[in-house]
Image (cartoon, rainbow, N blue to C red; front, side, top):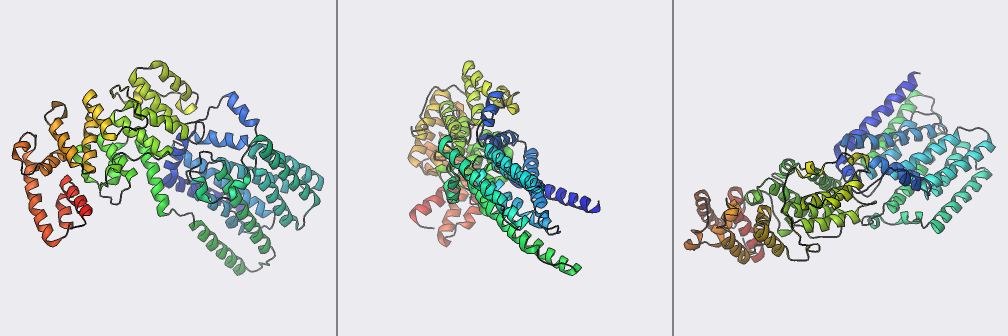
Length: 580
Protein backbone atom coordinates (compact mmCIF):
# COMPACT_ATOMS: atom_id res chain seq x y z
CA UNK A 1 0.00 0.00 0.00
CA UNK A 2 2.83 2.39 0.88
CA UNK A 3 4.48 1.57 -2.43
CA UNK A 4 1.34 2.47 -4.37
CA UNK A 5 1.03 5.77 -2.50
CA UNK A 6 4.66 6.59 -3.30
CA UNK A 7 4.14 5.80 -6.98
CA UNK A 8 1.01 7.95 -7.02
CA UNK A 9 2.93 10.87 -5.49
CA UNK A 10 5.72 10.35 -8.04
CA UNK A 11 3.36 10.67 -11.00
CA UNK A 12 1.59 13.62 -9.39
CA UNK A 13 4.96 15.39 -9.15
CA UNK A 14 5.61 14.55 -12.82
CA UNK A 15 2.23 16.04 -13.74
CA UNK A 16 2.97 19.24 -11.82
CA UNK A 17 6.41 19.62 -13.42
CA UNK A 18 5.10 19.08 -16.95
CA UNK A 19 2.18 21.47 -16.39
CA UNK A 20 4.57 24.09 -15.00
CA UNK A 21 6.81 23.75 -18.07
CA UNK A 22 3.92 24.13 -20.50
CA UNK A 23 2.30 27.00 -18.60
CA UNK A 24 5.40 29.18 -18.31
CA UNK A 25 7.03 28.39 -21.65
CA UNK A 26 4.51 27.10 -24.19
CA UNK A 27 1.06 28.49 -23.37
CA UNK A 28 1.43 31.25 -26.00
CA UNK A 29 2.24 28.63 -28.65
CA UNK A 30 -0.86 26.69 -27.67
CA UNK A 31 -2.89 29.87 -28.16
CA UNK A 32 -1.59 30.27 -31.71
CA UNK A 33 -2.47 26.62 -32.38
CA UNK A 34 -6.02 27.35 -31.26
CA UNK A 35 -6.40 30.26 -33.64
CA UNK A 36 -5.11 28.18 -36.58
CA UNK A 37 -7.99 25.72 -36.64
CA UNK A 38 -11.78 25.74 -36.64
CA UNK A 39 -13.71 22.86 -35.13
CA UNK A 40 -17.49 22.58 -35.31
CA UNK A 41 -18.62 19.91 -32.81
CA UNK A 42 -21.93 19.14 -34.53
CA UNK A 43 -23.28 15.70 -35.37
CA UNK A 44 -22.31 15.92 -39.02
CA UNK A 45 -18.67 16.83 -38.31
CA UNK A 46 -18.26 14.25 -35.56
CA UNK A 47 -19.78 11.53 -37.75
CA UNK A 48 -17.43 12.34 -40.61
CA UNK A 49 -14.44 12.00 -38.27
CA UNK A 50 -15.60 8.75 -36.73
CA UNK A 51 -16.34 7.18 -40.11
CA UNK A 52 -12.84 7.83 -41.46
CA UNK A 53 -9.56 6.12 -40.69
CA UNK A 54 -7.55 8.17 -38.21
CA UNK A 55 -10.57 10.31 -37.43
CA UNK A 56 -10.80 9.60 -33.70
CA UNK A 57 -7.33 10.95 -32.86
CA UNK A 58 -8.01 13.98 -35.02
CA UNK A 59 -11.37 14.51 -33.31
CA UNK A 60 -9.79 14.30 -29.85
CA UNK A 61 -7.02 16.68 -30.88
CA UNK A 62 -9.31 19.30 -32.40
CA UNK A 63 -11.66 19.10 -29.43
CA UNK A 64 -8.72 19.75 -27.06
CA UNK A 65 -7.14 22.53 -29.10
CA UNK A 66 -10.27 24.69 -29.03
CA UNK A 67 -9.51 25.33 -25.34
CA UNK A 68 -5.85 26.19 -25.90
CA UNK A 69 -6.41 29.94 -25.64
CA UNK A 70 -6.84 29.46 -21.88
CA UNK A 71 -3.17 29.24 -20.75
CA UNK A 72 -3.56 27.16 -17.60
CA UNK A 73 -6.09 24.78 -19.16
CA UNK A 74 -3.87 24.19 -22.19
CA UNK A 75 -0.93 23.42 -19.88
CA UNK A 76 -3.02 20.98 -17.85
CA UNK A 77 -4.30 19.17 -20.96
CA UNK A 78 -0.82 18.70 -22.41
CA UNK A 79 0.79 17.91 -19.06
CA UNK A 80 -1.90 15.34 -18.22
CA UNK A 81 -1.57 13.61 -21.58
CA UNK A 82 2.21 13.24 -21.31
CA UNK A 83 1.92 12.08 -17.71
CA UNK A 84 -0.62 9.46 -18.76
CA UNK A 85 1.70 8.26 -21.55
CA UNK A 86 4.53 7.95 -19.03
CA UNK A 87 2.34 6.04 -16.58
CA UNK A 88 1.23 3.53 -19.25
CA UNK A 89 4.88 3.06 -20.22
CA UNK A 90 5.60 2.29 -16.57
CA UNK A 91 2.85 -0.35 -16.48
CA UNK A 92 4.26 -1.93 -19.65
CA UNK A 93 7.81 -1.98 -18.29
CA UNK A 94 6.58 -3.64 -15.09
CA UNK A 95 5.48 -6.62 -17.23
CA UNK A 96 9.14 -7.15 -18.21
CA UNK A 97 10.58 -6.84 -14.69
CA UNK A 98 9.28 -5.24 -11.49
CA UNK A 99 12.07 -2.79 -10.75
CA UNK A 100 12.24 0.73 -9.31
CA UNK A 101 14.18 2.00 -12.31
CA UNK A 102 11.04 1.55 -14.45
CA UNK A 103 9.85 4.86 -13.03
CA UNK A 104 12.77 6.60 -14.72
CA UNK A 105 12.73 4.63 -17.96
CA UNK A 106 9.02 5.40 -18.27
CA UNK A 107 9.85 9.12 -18.44
CA UNK A 108 11.87 8.81 -21.64
CA UNK A 109 8.94 9.08 -24.08
CA UNK A 110 7.21 11.95 -22.19
CA UNK A 111 10.54 13.81 -22.10
CA UNK A 112 10.98 13.19 -25.82
CA UNK A 113 7.49 14.57 -26.49
CA UNK A 114 7.99 17.53 -24.16
CA UNK A 115 9.81 19.68 -26.66
CA UNK A 116 7.73 18.32 -29.54
CA UNK A 117 4.59 19.69 -27.87
CA UNK A 118 6.26 23.11 -27.72
CA UNK A 119 6.60 23.09 -31.52
CA UNK A 120 3.93 25.08 -33.34
CA UNK A 121 4.02 22.62 -36.26
CA UNK A 122 2.99 19.71 -34.05
CA UNK A 123 -0.56 18.91 -33.01
CA UNK A 124 -1.72 17.03 -29.95
CA UNK A 125 -3.49 14.51 -32.23
CA UNK A 126 -0.22 12.61 -32.51
CA UNK A 127 0.13 12.20 -28.76
CA UNK A 128 -3.42 10.92 -28.48
CA UNK A 129 -2.43 8.26 -31.02
CA UNK A 130 0.63 7.32 -28.97
CA UNK A 131 -1.49 7.03 -25.83
CA UNK A 132 -3.95 4.83 -27.75
CA UNK A 133 -1.39 2.26 -28.90
CA UNK A 134 0.17 2.10 -25.43
CA UNK A 135 -3.27 1.40 -23.94
CA UNK A 136 -3.89 -1.36 -26.48
CA UNK A 137 -0.49 -2.89 -25.73
CA UNK A 138 -1.16 -2.81 -22.00
CA UNK A 139 -4.57 -4.48 -22.43
CA UNK A 140 -2.99 -7.26 -24.51
CA UNK A 141 -0.22 -7.74 -21.92
CA UNK A 142 -2.80 -8.33 -19.18
CA UNK A 143 -4.35 -11.32 -21.01
CA UNK A 144 -2.98 -14.78 -20.20
CA UNK A 145 -4.49 -17.11 -22.81
CA UNK A 146 -2.69 -17.22 -26.15
CA UNK A 147 -5.85 -17.45 -28.28
CA UNK A 148 -7.64 -14.69 -26.43
CA UNK A 149 -4.51 -12.54 -26.61
CA UNK A 150 -4.35 -13.15 -30.37
CA UNK A 151 -8.01 -12.15 -30.78
CA UNK A 152 -7.59 -9.03 -28.67
CA UNK A 153 -4.46 -8.09 -30.62
CA UNK A 154 -6.42 -8.35 -33.87
CA UNK A 155 -9.17 -6.18 -32.40
CA UNK A 156 -6.56 -3.70 -31.16
CA UNK A 157 -5.03 -3.53 -34.64
CA UNK A 158 -8.41 -2.72 -36.15
CA UNK A 159 -9.11 -0.11 -33.46
CA UNK A 160 -5.75 1.58 -33.96
CA UNK A 161 -6.29 1.68 -37.73
CA UNK A 162 -9.73 3.20 -37.23
CA UNK A 163 -8.55 5.72 -34.64
CA UNK A 164 -5.02 6.50 -35.82
CA UNK A 165 -4.80 5.56 -39.50
CA UNK A 166 -1.20 4.99 -40.56
CA UNK A 167 -0.25 4.58 -36.90
CA UNK A 168 -1.33 0.95 -37.26
CA UNK A 169 2.02 0.01 -38.82
CA UNK A 170 3.97 1.31 -35.83
CA UNK A 171 1.48 -0.30 -33.46
CA UNK A 172 1.97 -3.81 -34.85
CA UNK A 173 5.76 -3.32 -34.84
CA UNK A 174 5.76 -2.06 -31.26
CA UNK A 175 3.45 -4.88 -30.22
CA UNK A 176 5.77 -7.41 -31.88
CA UNK A 177 8.86 -6.06 -30.13
CA UNK A 178 7.18 -5.63 -26.78
CA UNK A 179 5.59 -9.09 -26.66
CA UNK A 180 8.80 -10.78 -27.83
CA UNK A 181 10.71 -9.02 -25.01
CA UNK A 182 8.04 -9.73 -22.40
CA UNK A 183 7.46 -13.38 -23.39
CA UNK A 184 11.10 -13.96 -24.46
CA UNK A 185 9.86 -15.45 -27.75
CA UNK A 186 7.96 -14.58 -30.92
CA UNK A 187 4.57 -16.22 -31.41
CA UNK A 188 3.28 -17.12 -34.86
CA UNK A 189 0.28 -14.87 -34.48
CA UNK A 190 2.62 -11.88 -34.13
CA UNK A 191 3.57 -12.29 -37.78
CA UNK A 192 -0.09 -12.49 -38.77
CA UNK A 193 -0.84 -9.27 -36.90
CA UNK A 194 2.17 -7.58 -38.46
CA UNK A 195 1.03 -8.48 -41.98
CA UNK A 196 -2.51 -7.34 -41.19
CA UNK A 197 -1.26 -3.94 -40.04
CA UNK A 198 0.82 -3.45 -43.18
CA UNK A 199 -2.11 -4.43 -45.41
CA UNK A 200 -4.46 -2.04 -43.62
CA UNK A 201 -1.98 0.80 -43.93
CA UNK A 202 -1.50 0.08 -47.65
CA UNK A 203 -5.21 0.09 -48.38
CA UNK A 204 -5.63 3.21 -46.29
CA UNK A 205 -3.11 5.08 -48.44
CA UNK A 206 -4.06 3.48 -51.74
CA UNK A 207 -7.83 3.80 -51.62
CA UNK A 208 -8.51 6.58 -49.13
CA UNK A 209 -6.01 9.07 -50.57
CA UNK A 210 -4.27 9.34 -47.20
CA UNK A 211 -0.71 10.54 -46.68
CA UNK A 212 1.82 7.75 -46.43
CA UNK A 213 3.72 7.08 -43.23
CA UNK A 214 6.91 7.24 -45.32
CA UNK A 215 6.56 11.04 -45.32
CA UNK A 216 7.77 10.82 -41.73
CA UNK A 217 11.29 9.97 -42.93
CA UNK A 218 11.86 13.44 -44.39
CA UNK A 219 14.09 16.01 -42.74
CA UNK A 220 12.38 18.27 -40.20
CA UNK A 221 12.70 21.37 -42.40
CA UNK A 222 10.43 19.62 -44.90
CA UNK A 223 7.42 20.07 -42.61
CA UNK A 224 7.86 23.75 -41.72
CA UNK A 225 5.87 25.23 -44.62
CA UNK A 226 3.22 22.53 -44.93
CA UNK A 227 -0.37 23.52 -44.24
CA UNK A 228 -1.37 19.97 -43.29
CA UNK A 229 0.02 18.65 -39.99
CA UNK A 230 -0.19 14.89 -40.66
CA UNK A 231 3.29 14.44 -42.19
CA UNK A 232 4.96 16.04 -39.17
CA UNK A 233 2.93 13.80 -36.88
CA UNK A 234 4.30 10.83 -38.85
CA UNK A 235 7.81 12.24 -38.30
CA UNK A 236 7.18 12.25 -34.53
CA UNK A 237 5.53 8.81 -34.48
CA UNK A 238 8.51 7.17 -36.19
CA UNK A 239 10.94 8.67 -33.70
CA UNK A 240 8.73 7.71 -30.77
CA UNK A 241 8.81 4.15 -32.07
CA UNK A 242 12.62 4.22 -32.21
CA UNK A 243 12.76 5.68 -28.70
CA UNK A 244 10.36 3.07 -27.32
CA UNK A 245 12.32 0.28 -28.98
CA UNK A 246 15.50 1.58 -27.32
CA UNK A 247 13.79 1.67 -23.91
CA UNK A 248 12.59 -1.92 -24.38
CA UNK A 249 16.09 -3.10 -25.22
CA UNK A 250 17.48 -1.38 -22.11
CA UNK A 251 14.72 -2.82 -19.92
CA UNK A 252 15.28 -6.29 -21.39
CA UNK A 253 19.04 -6.18 -20.70
CA UNK A 254 18.58 -4.82 -17.19
CA UNK A 255 16.06 -7.56 -16.38
CA UNK A 256 18.92 -10.09 -16.36
CA UNK A 257 20.84 -8.20 -13.69
CA UNK A 258 20.75 -9.72 -10.24
CA UNK A 259 20.33 -6.82 -7.82
CA UNK A 260 20.51 -8.39 -4.38
CA UNK A 261 22.33 -5.74 -2.37
CA UNK A 262 20.90 -2.37 -1.51
CA UNK A 263 23.98 -0.58 -2.84
CA UNK A 264 23.71 -2.18 -6.29
CA UNK A 265 20.09 -1.07 -6.52
CA UNK A 266 20.94 2.43 -5.41
CA UNK A 267 23.88 2.60 -7.83
CA UNK A 268 21.83 1.42 -10.83
CA UNK A 269 18.93 3.74 -10.03
CA UNK A 270 21.34 6.65 -9.65
CA UNK A 271 22.91 5.95 -13.04
CA UNK A 272 19.50 5.74 -14.71
CA UNK A 273 18.34 8.95 -13.01
CA UNK A 274 21.40 10.75 -14.36
CA UNK A 275 20.93 9.33 -17.86
CA UNK A 276 17.23 10.22 -17.84
CA UNK A 277 18.04 13.74 -16.66
CA UNK A 278 20.63 14.11 -19.43
CA UNK A 279 18.07 12.93 -21.96
CA UNK A 280 15.51 15.34 -20.52
CA UNK A 281 17.98 18.21 -20.80
CA UNK A 282 17.60 17.92 -24.56
CA UNK A 283 14.14 19.39 -24.05
CA UNK A 284 15.58 22.56 -22.53
CA UNK A 285 14.57 25.59 -24.61
CA UNK A 286 17.18 26.79 -27.09
CA UNK A 287 17.70 30.39 -28.22
CA UNK A 288 15.66 29.56 -31.34
CA UNK A 289 12.83 28.22 -29.16
CA UNK A 290 12.81 31.38 -27.07
CA UNK A 291 12.62 33.45 -30.24
CA UNK A 292 9.66 31.44 -31.53
CA UNK A 293 7.90 31.66 -28.17
CA UNK A 294 8.49 35.40 -28.16
CA UNK A 295 6.72 35.65 -31.51
CA UNK A 296 3.84 33.55 -30.20
CA UNK A 297 3.58 35.71 -27.08
CA UNK A 298 3.35 38.85 -29.23
CA UNK A 299 0.55 37.27 -31.23
CA UNK A 300 -1.22 36.36 -27.97
CA UNK A 301 -0.86 39.85 -26.48
CA UNK A 302 -1.89 41.73 -29.63
CA UNK A 303 -4.97 39.53 -30.00
CA UNK A 304 -6.05 40.74 -26.54
CA UNK A 305 -5.00 44.37 -27.04
CA UNK A 306 -2.36 44.34 -24.30
CA UNK A 307 -0.29 47.07 -25.93
CA UNK A 308 1.36 48.34 -22.72
CA UNK A 309 2.74 44.87 -22.07
CA UNK A 310 4.18 44.63 -25.58
CA UNK A 311 5.90 48.00 -25.21
CA UNK A 312 7.33 47.26 -21.76
CA UNK A 313 8.72 43.85 -22.73
CA UNK A 314 10.84 45.48 -25.48
CA UNK A 315 12.13 48.51 -23.58
CA UNK A 316 15.91 48.57 -23.49
CA UNK A 317 16.21 45.50 -25.73
CA UNK A 318 18.69 45.38 -28.62
CA UNK A 319 18.79 43.19 -31.70
CA UNK A 320 15.03 43.27 -32.25
CA UNK A 321 13.78 41.47 -35.34
CA UNK A 322 11.47 43.16 -37.90
CA UNK A 323 8.58 41.09 -36.53
CA UNK A 324 9.22 42.35 -32.99
CA UNK A 325 9.43 45.92 -34.26
CA UNK A 326 6.15 45.58 -36.17
CA UNK A 327 4.40 44.63 -32.94
CA UNK A 328 6.13 47.35 -30.91
CA UNK A 329 5.36 50.05 -33.46
CA UNK A 330 1.76 48.86 -33.78
CA UNK A 331 1.44 49.00 -29.99
CA UNK A 332 2.82 52.56 -30.02
CA UNK A 333 0.28 53.51 -32.68
CA UNK A 334 -2.56 52.13 -30.55
CA UNK A 335 -1.28 54.29 -27.69
CA UNK A 336 -1.06 57.35 -29.97
CA UNK A 337 2.73 57.47 -29.43
CA UNK A 338 4.21 56.19 -32.70
CA UNK A 339 5.49 59.59 -33.85
CA UNK A 340 6.77 60.40 -30.36
CA UNK A 341 8.49 57.20 -29.23
CA UNK A 342 9.46 55.39 -32.45
CA UNK A 343 13.19 55.79 -31.83
CA UNK A 344 12.99 54.74 -28.20
CA UNK A 345 13.48 51.30 -29.73
CA UNK A 346 16.28 50.10 -31.99
CA UNK A 347 14.79 50.58 -35.46
CA UNK A 348 16.19 48.82 -38.51
CA UNK A 349 14.44 50.32 -41.49
CA UNK A 350 10.99 50.26 -43.04
CA UNK A 351 10.51 46.50 -42.62
CA UNK A 352 10.23 47.11 -38.90
CA UNK A 353 7.15 49.23 -39.53
CA UNK A 354 5.38 47.07 -42.12
CA UNK A 355 7.00 43.68 -42.67
CA UNK A 356 7.06 42.30 -46.25
CA UNK A 357 4.46 39.67 -47.04
CA UNK A 358 5.88 36.12 -47.19
CA UNK A 359 2.76 34.00 -47.77
CA UNK A 360 2.65 32.58 -44.24
CA UNK A 361 -0.20 32.53 -41.75
CA UNK A 362 1.80 34.37 -39.09
CA UNK A 363 2.77 37.34 -41.26
CA UNK A 364 -0.68 37.47 -42.88
CA UNK A 365 -2.25 37.83 -39.43
CA UNK A 366 0.31 40.44 -38.38
CA UNK A 367 -0.23 42.53 -41.53
CA UNK A 368 -3.99 42.30 -41.11
CA UNK A 369 -3.54 43.74 -37.61
CA UNK A 370 -1.16 46.47 -38.84
CA UNK A 371 -3.47 47.68 -41.60
CA UNK A 372 -6.46 47.46 -39.27
CA UNK A 373 -4.55 49.77 -36.93
CA UNK A 374 -3.82 52.15 -39.79
CA UNK A 375 -7.52 52.14 -40.73
CA UNK A 376 -7.15 50.43 -44.11
CA UNK A 377 -10.10 48.05 -43.91
CA UNK A 378 -9.74 46.59 -47.40
CA UNK A 379 -6.09 45.62 -47.12
CA UNK A 380 -6.66 44.30 -43.61
CA UNK A 381 -9.56 42.24 -44.96
CA UNK A 382 -7.38 40.86 -47.77
CA UNK A 383 -4.73 39.68 -45.34
CA UNK A 384 -7.40 38.22 -43.04
CA UNK A 385 -8.65 36.21 -46.00
CA UNK A 386 -5.10 35.01 -46.55
CA UNK A 387 -4.87 33.99 -42.88
CA UNK A 388 -8.13 32.10 -43.26
CA UNK A 389 -6.76 30.09 -46.19
CA UNK A 390 -3.28 29.55 -44.70
CA UNK A 391 -4.51 28.32 -41.31
CA UNK A 392 -3.71 24.72 -40.49
CA UNK A 393 -7.18 23.16 -40.38
CA UNK A 394 -10.47 24.47 -41.77
CA UNK A 395 -9.66 28.14 -41.19
CA UNK A 396 -8.90 30.55 -38.37
CA UNK A 397 -11.33 31.89 -35.72
CA UNK A 398 -9.07 34.92 -35.29
CA UNK A 399 -9.32 35.72 -39.00
CA UNK A 400 -13.10 35.27 -38.89
CA UNK A 401 -13.33 37.71 -35.99
CA UNK A 402 -11.33 40.28 -37.95
CA UNK A 403 -13.59 39.83 -40.98
CA UNK A 404 -16.67 40.24 -38.76
CA UNK A 405 -15.17 43.40 -37.23
CA UNK A 406 -14.53 44.92 -40.65
CA UNK A 407 -18.03 44.02 -41.82
CA UNK A 408 -19.46 45.61 -38.67
CA UNK A 409 -17.51 48.84 -39.24
CA UNK A 410 -18.69 48.94 -42.83
CA UNK A 411 -22.27 48.42 -41.78
CA UNK A 412 -22.50 45.16 -43.76
CA UNK A 413 -24.75 43.36 -41.28
CA UNK A 414 -25.52 40.39 -43.54
CA UNK A 415 -21.83 39.65 -44.12
CA UNK A 416 -21.06 40.16 -40.44
CA UNK A 417 -23.80 37.70 -39.47
CA UNK A 418 -22.38 35.13 -41.89
CA UNK A 419 -19.05 35.18 -40.07
CA UNK A 420 -20.66 35.23 -36.64
CA UNK A 421 -22.80 32.23 -37.55
CA UNK A 422 -19.63 30.22 -38.20
CA UNK A 423 -17.97 31.44 -35.02
CA UNK A 424 -20.96 30.58 -32.88
CA UNK A 425 -20.81 26.97 -34.01
CA UNK A 426 -17.70 26.68 -31.84
CA UNK A 427 -18.41 26.52 -28.09
CA UNK A 428 -15.68 28.98 -27.18
CA UNK A 429 -17.09 31.73 -29.45
CA UNK A 430 -20.83 31.35 -28.91
CA UNK A 431 -21.05 34.52 -26.82
CA UNK A 432 -18.75 36.65 -28.97
CA UNK A 433 -19.61 40.35 -29.14
CA UNK A 434 -18.07 42.24 -32.06
CA UNK A 435 -18.75 45.66 -30.56
CA UNK A 436 -16.77 44.62 -27.52
CA UNK A 437 -13.95 43.33 -29.75
CA UNK A 438 -13.50 46.67 -31.52
CA UNK A 439 -13.91 48.51 -28.20
CA UNK A 440 -15.98 51.32 -29.66
CA UNK A 441 -13.40 52.40 -32.25
CA UNK A 442 -14.95 53.96 -35.32
CA UNK A 443 -12.57 53.26 -38.16
CA UNK A 444 -13.21 54.99 -41.49
CA UNK A 445 -14.93 53.05 -44.22
CA UNK A 446 -12.47 52.49 -47.05
CA UNK A 447 -13.76 50.79 -50.18
CA UNK A 448 -10.28 50.56 -51.67
CA UNK A 449 -9.01 47.08 -52.44
CA UNK A 450 -5.25 47.18 -52.86
CA UNK A 451 -4.83 43.48 -53.62
CA UNK A 452 -2.46 42.72 -50.76
CA UNK A 453 -0.68 46.03 -51.02
CA UNK A 454 0.49 45.77 -54.62
CA UNK A 455 0.12 49.56 -54.52
CA UNK A 456 3.22 51.22 -52.98
CA UNK A 457 2.81 51.57 -49.22
CA UNK A 458 3.35 55.32 -49.15
CA UNK A 459 0.74 55.86 -51.89
CA UNK A 460 -1.73 53.75 -49.98
CA UNK A 461 -1.15 55.64 -46.73
CA UNK A 462 -1.42 58.98 -48.55
CA UNK A 463 -4.90 58.03 -49.77
CA UNK A 464 -6.03 57.38 -46.21
CA UNK A 465 -4.57 60.64 -45.00
CA UNK A 466 -6.18 62.80 -47.69
CA UNK A 467 -9.56 61.10 -47.94
CA UNK A 468 -10.15 59.99 -44.35
CA UNK A 469 -7.84 62.22 -42.24
CA UNK A 470 -6.70 59.17 -40.27
CA UNK A 471 -4.14 60.01 -37.57
CA UNK A 472 -2.54 56.57 -37.52
CA UNK A 473 -2.08 56.61 -41.30
CA UNK A 474 -0.47 60.06 -40.99
CA UNK A 475 2.02 58.89 -38.37
CA UNK A 476 2.73 55.61 -40.17
CA UNK A 477 3.51 57.45 -43.41
CA UNK A 478 5.81 59.96 -41.72
CA UNK A 479 7.60 57.19 -39.82
CA UNK A 480 7.85 55.16 -43.03
CA UNK A 481 9.78 58.00 -44.66
CA UNK A 482 11.92 58.52 -41.55
CA UNK A 483 12.93 54.87 -41.30
CA UNK A 484 13.76 54.73 -45.02
CA UNK A 485 15.74 58.02 -44.82
CA UNK A 486 13.60 59.16 -47.73
CA UNK A 487 14.50 62.80 -47.17
CA UNK A 488 12.89 64.20 -50.33
CA UNK A 489 9.50 62.66 -49.63
CA UNK A 490 9.77 63.53 -45.94
CA UNK A 491 10.34 67.17 -46.80
CA UNK A 492 7.27 67.15 -49.04
CA UNK A 493 5.31 65.38 -46.31
CA UNK A 494 6.25 67.99 -43.69
CA UNK A 495 5.51 70.95 -45.97
CA UNK A 496 2.18 69.48 -47.04
CA UNK A 497 0.73 68.44 -43.69
CA UNK A 498 2.41 70.47 -40.94
CA UNK A 499 -0.07 73.34 -41.12
CA UNK A 500 -3.14 71.08 -41.20
CA UNK A 501 -5.07 71.33 -37.89
CA UNK A 502 -5.89 67.60 -38.12
CA UNK A 503 -2.27 66.77 -37.28
CA UNK A 504 -1.83 68.98 -34.22
CA UNK A 505 0.21 68.51 -32.14
CA UNK A 506 3.07 67.69 -34.46
CA UNK A 507 4.77 64.42 -33.35
CA UNK A 508 8.16 64.85 -31.71
CA UNK A 509 10.05 62.81 -34.30
CA UNK A 510 8.50 64.89 -37.10
CA UNK A 511 9.74 68.03 -35.34
CA UNK A 512 13.18 66.44 -35.16
CA UNK A 513 13.01 65.64 -38.88
CA UNK A 514 12.09 69.21 -39.73
CA UNK A 515 15.06 70.56 -37.73
CA UNK A 516 17.40 68.04 -39.41
CA UNK A 517 16.15 68.35 -42.98
CA UNK A 518 15.60 72.12 -43.08
CA UNK A 519 18.73 73.04 -41.15
CA UNK A 520 19.89 76.48 -42.24
CA UNK A 521 16.50 77.36 -43.76
CA UNK A 522 14.98 79.47 -40.99
CA UNK A 523 12.18 80.69 -43.24
CA UNK A 524 10.85 77.17 -43.79
CA UNK A 525 11.40 76.17 -40.19
CA UNK A 526 9.26 79.07 -39.01
CA UNK A 527 6.22 77.40 -40.60
CA UNK A 528 6.54 74.29 -38.46
CA UNK A 529 5.06 74.12 -34.93
CA UNK A 530 8.38 73.15 -33.33
CA UNK A 531 8.73 73.24 -29.57
CA UNK A 532 11.61 75.38 -28.26
CA UNK A 533 12.77 72.40 -26.19
CA UNK A 534 13.37 70.42 -29.38
CA UNK A 535 15.19 73.34 -31.02
CA UNK A 536 17.49 73.68 -28.03
CA UNK A 537 18.15 69.96 -27.95
CA UNK A 538 18.98 69.98 -31.67
CA UNK A 539 21.62 72.65 -31.11
CA UNK A 540 23.15 70.43 -28.43
CA UNK A 541 23.06 67.53 -30.88
CA UNK A 542 24.91 69.50 -33.54
CA UNK A 543 27.66 70.33 -31.06
CA UNK A 544 27.83 66.68 -29.98
CA UNK A 545 28.19 65.55 -33.59
CA UNK A 546 31.22 67.75 -34.05
CA UNK A 547 32.83 66.10 -31.04
CA UNK A 548 31.96 62.65 -32.36
CA UNK A 549 33.48 63.42 -35.74
CA UNK A 550 36.70 64.25 -33.95
CA UNK A 551 36.97 60.96 -32.04
CA UNK A 552 34.95 58.82 -34.50
CA UNK A 553 32.85 57.24 -31.72
CA UNK A 554 29.05 57.06 -31.79
CA UNK A 555 28.62 55.66 -28.28
CA UNK A 556 28.70 59.07 -26.58
CA UNK A 557 26.16 60.39 -29.06
CA UNK A 558 23.90 57.38 -28.47
CA UNK A 559 23.80 57.91 -24.71
CA UNK A 560 22.31 61.40 -25.04
CA UNK A 561 20.43 61.27 -28.34
CA UNK A 562 19.82 57.57 -29.06
CA UNK A 563 16.04 58.05 -28.92
CA UNK A 564 15.94 60.72 -31.64
CA UNK A 565 15.60 60.76 -35.39
CA UNK A 566 18.83 62.75 -35.49
CA UNK A 567 20.85 59.85 -34.13
CA UNK A 568 19.11 57.37 -36.43
CA UNK A 569 19.79 59.66 -39.39
CA UNK A 570 23.45 60.04 -38.41
CA UNK A 571 23.92 56.32 -37.78
CA UNK A 572 22.21 55.12 -40.97
CA UNK A 573 23.96 57.75 -43.06
CA UNK A 574 27.29 56.66 -41.58
CA UNK A 575 26.58 53.05 -42.48
CA UNK A 576 25.68 53.97 -46.03
CA UNK A 577 28.80 56.07 -46.46
CA UNK A 578 30.97 53.66 -44.43
CA UNK A 579 32.28 56.32 -42.11
CA UNK A 580 32.14 57.24 -38.42
